[in-house]
Image: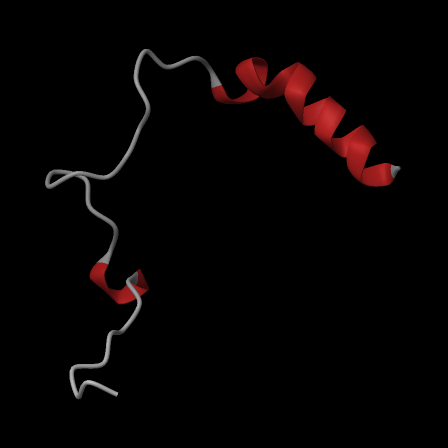
Length: 46
């Protein structure tokens, strides 16, 4: 119930709060995620 109300509030105000974009903002080579935030992968094959 509360979750639905919060969702509706965000849905109604998302453009006012975050603005509109012509394209999706995804990280690429120019705007990559910080390396320290990237998950660590194991190289030992386990």
